[in-house]
Length: 193
Image (cartoon, rainbow, N blue to C red; front, side):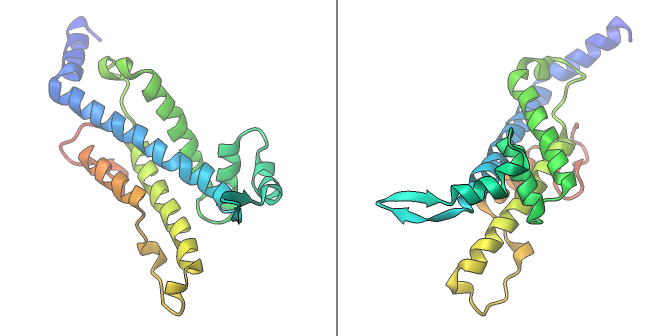
């Protein structure tokens, strides 16, 4: 590549509208990870909640350790992901994507200046779209459990796939601002990837 081509690529990357789009996508990606992580780690642990005692939450820690932590004793995040696969909340493919999402999140968070100036380093919109879908699936899973145990829904037919959690609605909105469509894992026409 010639110096002129390098200069043109860097100039395009530093154009105000390109910087704004990059920062929006980076913020959306960082938000996606922060919305996913508690639904995996905290919500899985909360599944083993057993009530209160003196205002303190009680958990079946032995069952949690046996059912979840034993799946990956060194990594609570991956152990929780494995449990979610066993519960059919996520697929193995989604868990693979979640690993890539976690890795890319760290790249973005720790190398933001590089993201702004390196023409070859971009927010991976394919992973952003995958993150939106994972947030959707987790919302459906946890929402279906809530609907199943809530007496208000006794005797009613529930459209589980129609459940939209607050986290999903926020992610869907942020992704739309970033020009990313969760449905087809592509950037909208006219948007840079």
